[in-house]
Image (cartoon, rainbow, N blue to C red; front, top):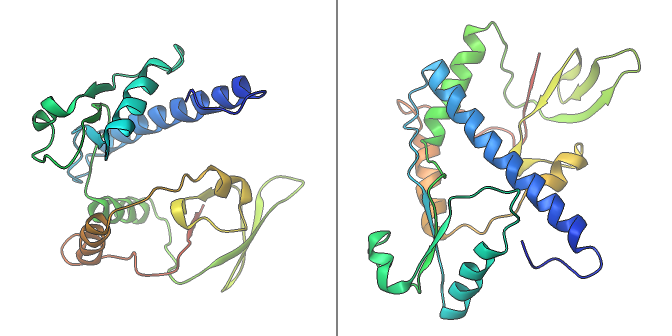
Amino acid sequence: LGTEPRGDAHAVGHRHVVAVAEGHRALDYMEDFIRREGLKVNWERVGRFHAAHNPRRYELEAQSLKSIPKELKTDAYAVPRAEQHSEIGSDAYYGGIVMPHHAAMHPAKYENALIALVRQAGGTIVPNCRVTGIVRESGGGFVVTTAQGVVKAREVIVATNGYTGEITPWQRRRVIPILITFTSIVGGLVALAFGLAGESLLWGPLAASLIW
């Protein structure tokens, strides 16, 4: 925010506000959903510390907080290098931004909890079944083409996240690329590989859809 190209700054800034606000609502919805369903996924509002790798980056990040539009409520705040030990036990950074609203959970436990909910509701899970096309019918509903045949559905949920492909271009444009450190990748893969009670269904196709 605050770095939009000239000539279209207002439009771009508005889209950023809408996108971030939607993200806040999604996070609140997920917390409510997890608590309402009683899911044991280690959900916790732990916050996030976004560290600056050099002094200039810290100054830019701290200044950006002052440029956030008033419509976008945020509780984020800057922490200078002299005080960063209150957030992280390292001297490798030059301060950073704290976002208290952020949360964490165990992704494999969440995946297995969702699978259990689907089965309890009478849903059918078909692994290794790649979706190759989704077409909306004029009279309502959808025709979903998969590697194992064609399915007609009243509603379709696209839950592919970072694996969103070309069959849903609108969803693909909304996915934000994030650079992840090697440590995070290894830690995440280990957690997903073992999952809850040593079981995980993530090692299937890159994209899957739940069809109701």
